[in-house]
Image (cartoon, rainbow, N blue to C red; front, side, top):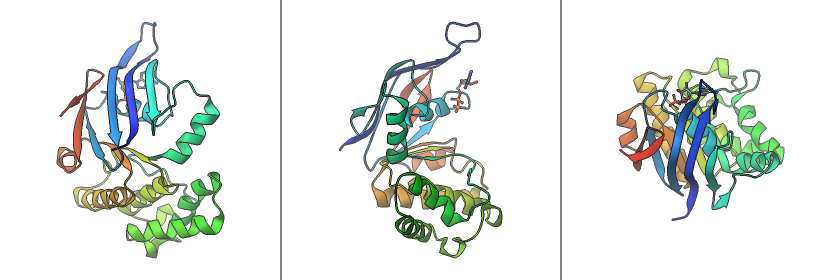
Length: 226
Ligand code: ADP
């Protein structure tokens, strides 16, 4: 199996050396293979968002290395990291963060245009993704015209628009009622399985976590098997 994400001995503190120093990650090790869905479980404040931001090249560790598809990204310049993030990583958050003035299709097309894809190809990709999550009928609707579960399914499509190798999700169903959460979780699993990508999904929901391939805990700044 090829390793899509490798975190090697990551340490991260906020306000280092100052009175308000918070040590969040310490000797943190994790790797996720292509086709593998890993649940990241930890209490609030344990550092899940920090870990996901470092894994997705949105933040840098104090020490340690992040490798994407075997390429060490730590120490590379902002431009190289931005390009790698755009091509290799899809993000999903607890709240959809869709652009309110654009339709579902446009929200999925825009990140592809930013990645140099032609408009017709980007629109075809958006239609394909919307069909996979059962939202073909909602393609022209804006976020305010969609339900919470529909908004989040569009956000998944947007995250996968550029066919990333790695999906990072931070409580992707945390804002939904249990029934909707189930539908949305099933859609996410299907999308990830169909693409064969690697996924690291932070969740408080132990039932959902158990349905992933592997569950890891973030405890005292380190990753432990659950
Ligand atoms: P989680 O996602 O598990 O809730 P976070 O990664 O958001 O945890 O935060 C981990 C810890 O780091 C928390 O104690 C939080 O208060 C602290 N923290 C997060 N961001 C900052 C920051 N920018 N400055 C100082 N402390 C921070």
